[in-house]
Each structure stands twice: as C-alpha cells, then as structure tokens.
Length: 112
Image 1 (tube, rainbow, N blue to C red):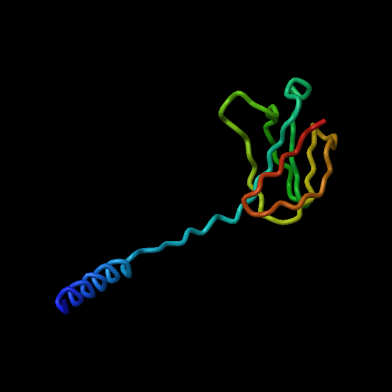
Image 2 (cartoon, rainbow, N blue to C red):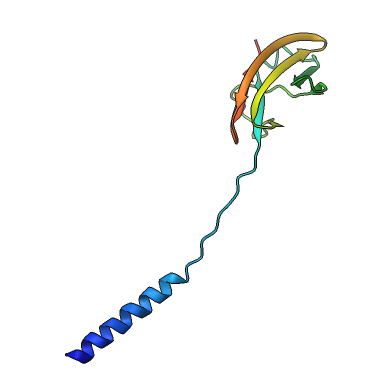
C-alpha cells in the first residue's frame, strides 16, 4: 500500500515539473493610429485632395467609397492623441475637425 502511495506521489511530482517549464511570451502592439477618408468618389473625381493635421505640411490623399468593393483600402498613419485634421480639395478647405484617436483605432472622415 505504501508503495502505491509513493508511486502516486512521484507521478504527481513529475506531471507538476513538466508544467513548470511552460513558455509565455508578450507581444507589444505598435503605437499607431489611422485615418481613413471616404466619400462620394464621383463628386470629387479629378479633384486633388490633401490632408493636413496639427499644422504639418499637406500631403495628397486617395478618396474611397464608404463600402468599397475592392480589397485595397487607404489608411494614413498618425500618432495616437488629439489632432486637428483638415481636408482640402485643391486649396479649398472642406473639412476641419478635431479628433482624439486612441492606439490602434481608425478614425473615419466622411467627406460631404
């Protein structure tokens, strides 16, 4: 009887020892947020669209339909935080908004 108890105890120790060697890992999510500009593509066809945030230099953007059928989506990287976002059609300001964008969030801006 004592031999069975000893054997049982040794087996429990062996199973517990195997469990102690498990590996854990942590993954850091990149600190990025995104802006997506959608609207009536036909209305702005031929127009040069630009985005500017926090008084940085303007840069050209691509407009896409709100529910595109194509796979390629256009997202623009931005640091998380509060931003003043401006959208221009040529030199005409069409959107001026302030937005808080958290980490890994996508802010969708819909053109009129």
